[in-house]
Length: 224
Image (cartoon, one colour):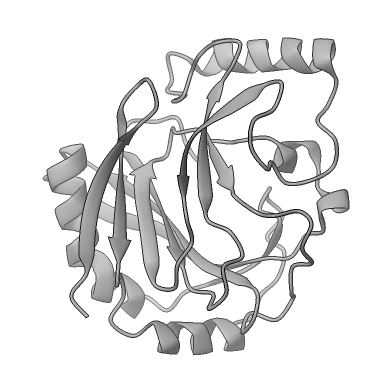
């Protein structure tokens, strides 16, 4: 299957995201590798378990990602896969920590990109992007980071913490601006400073089996 690539500009800031269907040449092999991987909690804020992906994955998709990074984001000199992880979302909604109940960014520095590759055969949820109500920010770069954190702290002090659960849509603090639906072998590539979170129905039980659960590959890249 030849990959189908499209670009969408989202929100009031018009940030581009790249959506690719038919992303990897052999998704069934990747699912099998994910099922065999030593998945475990990584100590970060990911609500589930993770394991490194074989480096040949980067070789298989690298040219496609580099072409998108060059054409859409203007990165023509260098593209490096910093971390590439099988990721299985397993944390029950009631067990989520505060940071897992809010949209987040992956990095503030320029030239950082993030990629989510959906592998699950069932539609366990894609990715949503958000605007912070108080500041109006949809992206959080170095020039906005301190102001955003201060405003968010004020919001939480005034409104209280969000209730346990994955973010299902609009809240008192955040407004969704785009939703990428998960489909088998679809990937979304975006700048790491976009506010986002997994779009998960917190009324469903997330399987701990990678063969049937919300299995993705998350890649974090540096580009110039």
